[in-house]
Image 1 (cartoon, protein in one colour):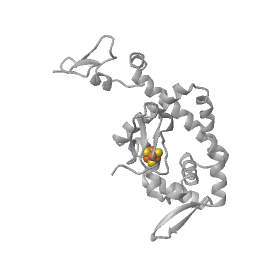
Image 2 (cartoon, rainbow, N blue to C red):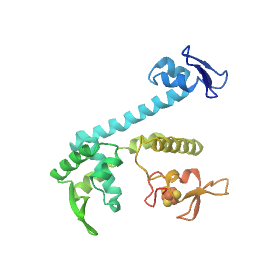
Image 3 (cartoon, rainbow, N blue to C red):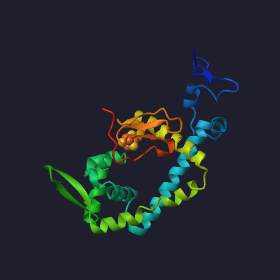
Image 4 (cartoon, rainbow, N blue to C red):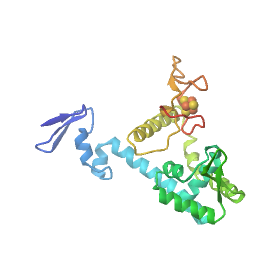
Length: 235
Ligand code: SF4
């Protein structure tokens, strides 16, 4: 049996892929059988090189977070939690939400929160409207430290700033598209961007092809949000 995805065909009996000349690096089944970390495969596949480039970028974030870890003796997850609480105080986050936010198991988030409470960075307070629920709040010490560590990724922004605005728009749109697909397939759970918002629509303005029905304004690609405080999920 042969399957064809437009980029090439795969013969399941012979276990052989025939790329379509001038179109692609091979059929989907063939691509799935190769590791993106295999340099020979990378040389044939731009898709694989993009994935590996993204993995290198994630290394930059890890390195920057570990630098902060050395300064403040807080784990990368603890640093991410206090930064999140600093900039999203209105969300009244608890352990469950933090676990979803950072794609970790609830016990892992719970351990990180307990340590932060013990070290005096966080307190847990009952929600005014629901006494059974508790929300996490930064202490003054937590706020000060969160503000200091929240600059850990600005060094990475320094490398993006010199790009031309056209390149930035393509980059932003491509990244949002990839994140959207990863959210749709359940790999990423964080969800506060335009593409998945119930207020998101299209406009007739070719320069601003998107529309926010809450703000009642057309949006250019450069306006698309990834962490919008007004976001509401599609029901
Ligand atoms: S409310 Fe925010 S996330 Fe939703 S469409 Fe408008 S700008 Fe985008």
